[in-house]
Image (cartoon, rainbow, N blue to C red; front, side, top):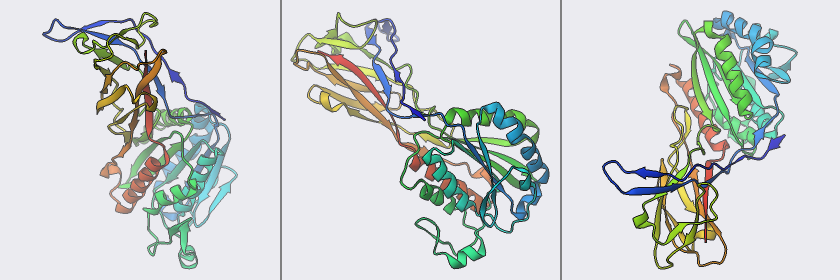
Amino acid sequence: MMKSGTVITATLSLWLLLEPGSAAATNACQPHVRSLNGAVITNTAVSVYWDRSGSMRHFTNVVSEIVNTLDSAILPQAGAGSVVHVSVGSTVQQMHDALPALNTDQQWTALHTAAERSAADLASGRVAVAIYVSDMVLEIPAKERKSRPFACADVAMPSNEHAGAIFGRCFSAGLNGRTLSDLYASVFRATVKGRGLYVLVIGTNVALAREIDRSMQTTWSELKADHFTIADTVMAVNADGVSCSWNPASFRGLRVANAAVGSECRFRCDDEALISLMNCRVRPPTSGAWMAAGPPTGKTLPLALAFSRTTAVREDGFSVQLQCPKRGKYITSGTTLTYPWKTSMPTLISPDADVRRLFDGALKAFAAAVPQRSIEVTFDVQ
């Protein structure tokens, strides 16, 4: 079930800001701000993919702790609903519970098939969070490599059984052209004798995925696992606290309308011949995740192009040039800020180049799957 995004409208009292070392006063107002992204996912179904290949024998004690606590403590505490356990070996098969994960009797690790399946489930809404417990060493079964031309839809079968780079390609293939409205992804890494065991969390129900992540950190504190935030698209751009201000000396064509409520940005014409300049401040994008919002681009609302221009767009705001709209009623003017995704994966995630390629490919797939963040900043002019 999806609910439409929330419109954020904040008002503060009109205030005067004094420039440091200057007696010139700056007037300010609060525009209307609306996020153009994100339907809230309320589904709570979880799928857990368990790597059962022989290389997982190095992590017997750690996997035992994860099996003992994941669906009996962590997921219920976080508010998960149904939980489906899936074996990943030569094939990808559903299990009755997590206990078979302790039996690492598989020769191969078809993580690419699991990636395609989990992406399809996330995109369709069948599942809200997918969790992987694996050393992330993707091993394509020999029979599959010899008999199939494609590893997954439109992804050619590699010659090498170790092809971590196709994990992200197969995740994208599973989406089948669909997008994910929002995404939370993180990874835990437990190191045993120089080898890394990973718990990868991928969720479209961002609130649920965050709670699972927090519960994992608390419950598995004794594992001394490293934690990395890959993506939190809901927190990437903060639409709160946007304000616009101007110096009266450069804002003589307009004035604050008597009809303005509180400190809302609502203006009336004073001089049709003059251009008024206004600066709007926004909070810079949140940093720290592997996938973060980059510097925005700004676009004036189409209906306001005759009397408004957006200029000097930067991470912390933009400027607007305004003229009288020469209309008898209020016209909504404003700017749409669009933030492209930028990605950066730490190389320390693994000493194994193929595992690094797996995470790098997954990161690129995530960035391609989630629409860029956009906010709309508007004000009324007559």
